[in-house]
Amino acid sequence: MGVVTDRRRVVRVREGARAARPDTLAVEEPLMVRLVAPGTPLGAPRPLGGPRLVGPVVPVGGPLPDDGAPARPGSETLTVTMRTPGDDFDLVAGWLVSEGVVGAAADIAAMRLCPDEDNTVEVALARGVEPPRARAFATTSACGVCGSDTVVEVRAALRWPVAGDPVTVGADVISALPDLLRERQRAFERTGGLHAAGLFTADGEPLYVREDVGRHNAVDKVVGAALRDGALPAAGTVLQVSGRASFELVQKAARAGIPVLSAISAPSTLAVDLAEECGLTLLGFVRGDSMNVYTRADRLR
Image (cartoon, rainbow, N blue to C red; front, side, top):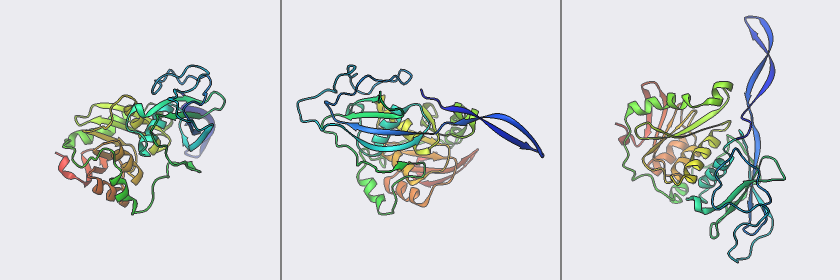
């Protein structure tokens, strides 16, 4: 686990009086994701709080498993994202799901922290898995796929269509999810500066909860944890997020096979359009016993 919070000196002003005091802030650092070709030596792994490695453990200083096919030398930077350190392997795995690259843990041959560079994860895909398009820019919480013409394209590319998921969820369960999520936001309790995402059963039982400065990263961490546990597609589940529902979050939910997305704040028009196209239930303004159901209200009982 990386450093999630840090202390900074601030001047607090209250009722005209000033006082110097320490404040706890959420850490934000870049994470570079590099694609490494099978057969490329990765060097010694750096521990990340004892994480589970995806796929077989690569011997220290040894190459990734090679089946004899020609390997592309070197590595390629896929993306750089600004994130809160911690659960980095889940983040990378979830990002690959969101990009439509992987659907099972076996699609990732191995992942490890780069021994020579901080904040860098090296990932090798299994043979036959096509890599995502490299991004030549930093990904932030505002990034996503833009343009209404992408709605149909996203639906057509879904690995696990969610429209036919028969799950139903009680309104009382949905109403309880924001508080259940909030209770598990340990870093938010100290900083007030982190988003969260949680995957729950239709009965409101928590499966995975993750925090991050970016909404999209928190969702990727949840989806990546589910992938690495063999829990995708996440049929019959509800994804609760701590902020608004953007097009990108609907896309990430749909690509993970999640049929219900609940948000504390508002969705965007394109998020509603995509949810409608995919047959995903989208709820917003979930506060107390009040909520708006924007699509597939038949799943709410």
